[in-house]
Amino acid sequence: MEYDFINVIPPMRAPDVIRNSPLPWADKWTDQGWVEADKHSLRHPRYPDVFSVGDIAGVPKGKTAASVKWQVPVAMAHLIADIEGKQSNESYNGYTSCPLITRVGRAMLVEFDYKNNLTPSFPGVIAPLEELWISWLMKEVALKATYNAMLRGKA
Amino acid sequence: MNELTLSTLLAVFEEMFGRHLFWGLVIACTIIAFLFIYVIIRDNKIEAKRLVRAELWAPVGAAIGIAFVFFITSSNFADIGGPIDVIVLILIAVAGAVGMTILAYIVQSLSSSQKS
Image (cartoon, rainbow over all chains, first blue to last red):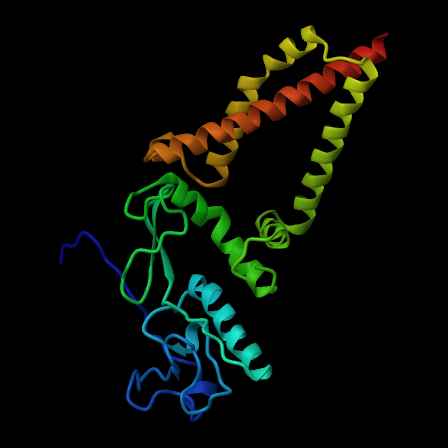
């Protein structure tokens, strides 16, 4: 069979510790077992002390490191507000980032939210829908370094 | 966490280069900057002849800068896609040119002082 483009997504599911717990959605993604969560506050509707971010979070978008960068501050704000007995208005808008490599040396830095609105980090500088060398540079040297720094709690 | 702070930048650069290489480069840059200031204070002026000679090295520095970035990122001139790419390329070239000029000026100043 001839084709111009192939995009293979391997099967994905939450780790056993989540899937075998009461945390996953009862009526959504039942074969994958992501944690039930309000898509804006990331709070569990049935267990209000539980927040989920990253791969295990059962929200429509955001299983990327770029999303985690925006999810963690939201979950953190709600946790701190809870501890202080206050309410937080922080909300996650579904931000995610897909550096689409179109060839070795060029990429498109596509960022969007729940509503599929483009949310460029560098509006007017890096055009999200153009194949650019600078997007490739970002992907090659900056992104992984940023996410590694996040794992150290420094970014 | 959403703000870009100095500590965030430092952490990202540490991850980019590796901690030892990054701080090694910072120390090297600091030493070179101090040497540049030192020779200017020592000579009490910027020696025009030396500066012009040092500037001859600028294109070499620019070329090395661009070649280095292309090498590190497995790309080449054919990958330049839009105006912003050209601007980035120019900035890299300028950084390489300025760095090489300063280095060449320091080397000349220090070697000439040894002769005298």
